[in-house]
Length: 257
Image (cartoon, rainbow, N blue to C red):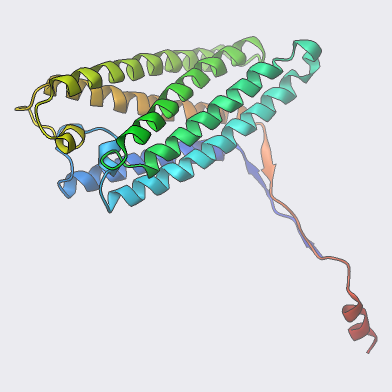
């Protein structure tokens, strides 16, 4: 006796990833504003998940997203290998493996962002944010180039990915620069510098610039995740089969009796 499960289109996995990340950051943003944990002006994404209960949602959501993103990047790696296997020695094995390592670095960084809150372990949190943002940005650019050169992807897709990669690089860099300048000019407490800023404090204009660029970079990356559905739509994941093992001696004895 066995049970065969139906195929699941891989495109839904990519769309689920984008949905989970969007739901996580928007939910924690609304809760943190409602509970007064951050200022109403655009806060840092991480600041919306700095205090409970939103920190619980933030950490869990990013952990799930990191796991699914790693699965998606592995699926894309397998698809790229399958589509370039005819190239022989010209197959970009090293490049594809490097991209897989980048996705692992970005996924680990995302878990660090979710599990090490900004107000508790700022250094680890910032390292994780750098791994997530810049690791994913480089991955997006390489994905666009591989799509164009090796996979024969439609120009609309690889060009869109390249634009997203360039925009992610620009916004992530500007976010880092503005955040640094904002911290230098800030004249309040350490906790206020991370979660609750107001116009009367130094560097507030640079603070708003940095938070705006961070949100832009975040949603650019989420938008990229949806482009995986283009390749994934031609493939499906077959769930495991449930198969009855061979009858044991006790089963045979009971049948005879």
